[in-house]
Image (cartoon, rainbow, N blue to C red):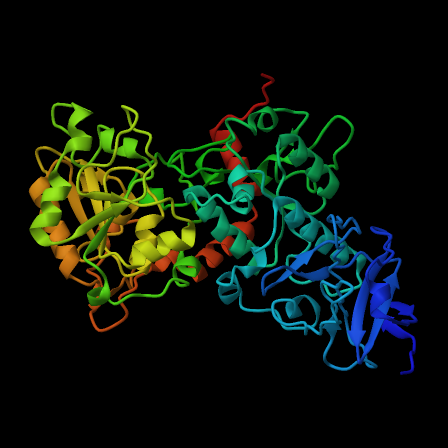
Length: 578
């Protein structure tokens, strides 16, 4: 086979054929050298470009490709040394065939393994940009990342973009810093509500092309801003009243001049970080403002403005929301009649049964009898059903168990949890956790939810505008039976009725044609249109991934300087040193 020089990312190179034995321990001099091995037509070639700092598409141990920056710091394990050798070709290489193969996971007994560069790798090199709504539903781009390799990937992508050696895709050079701990928490295995929210937000930002970095703490947030100040588009901070507070009111940290008079902001120097105040937003799972610029600069997972009233000056939290569409759709749907007569009790901790806002709490306030209450056992026997749940056994006294009639399951990982929901006929909320994503996941799996109503007007108990409960978002979406059953605390007969109906009634798909993210007058909503012949999965329109992508697009595409100027005046923002 003849070897000829070819163009590779703008640099002329003369690849040479190398036997597999030479590929075990390549000499790499990262970060100054780009080195890859490409298996082409029976010849393994080493490609070196000292001027490049390009992405290496890396295949992990599973079947999906990963993207990681390779600094040549691959760790050798004891025993057999295993190198993952990756190849990538950028641009049009006229002398190469259309199929490019990469050598992966080679050792002395392993032959060269041809792997074609396929989606989603293709989009980074020579493929068309994909529809963001569909791209965000994939989610596989995050698999295998740790916070460190996540940062390495995006650092490298930005460097590649700046080098001018590849076409910089839309928004690649716009950086979002994500110091709120729940962003990194997703990659550490957390699947609590906050991490499910950040999961969807990262998918949306990824689909829209934005680069992201995960600072591990406040000092690293400062350092990354200094390093990338020309590219930092927004900072989604942790609790602004906690970790961010030393910066957000400090003249040596933020730039808080007239947002419309001096732009761009001067670069950081030895004494000032100069983070523009209007680029900092506070992530907050609950209703209420955080940070110095109030509600418009507070990002929320639920449209709290639909059931709360704020003053004109307050404004409202910025609703981004989240979606469980991608994860729940991976779990097969089970027809209602094929499911066991099983109800799943939503509660992470056994102590939820002992709280004063517990669904069946003692009117006198004595919670000592809650764990011995035989309500569940009697109802299960009466209507031939089973109660299940997975609870942390942390109630007092030590050794306490769930109430009689409830089967304690082992701790479930997320896929197993979804399967258990899918094979249930209803999910029961007992008061906590509030605003959990689980009811949305249940509805997506075709499982109705029983929502505990914890407060109402005693003089007008059926006035739903004055109700509040475990999941107010579902309450104020006007979702009702057979999707959501609202049961007042201590109403045992009402609970029995709801359980019996939910066990026997499959949910049809409900189409809220009117529901819009920005609807302000919830009292003008028409009745939902129900089509009982369509799919029994149900995803609220505002929680479709395409809707989340659109809201993130609007959020990141807004010039926030005029709003910041207004909020600085309303909040009487001043520096303080405390």
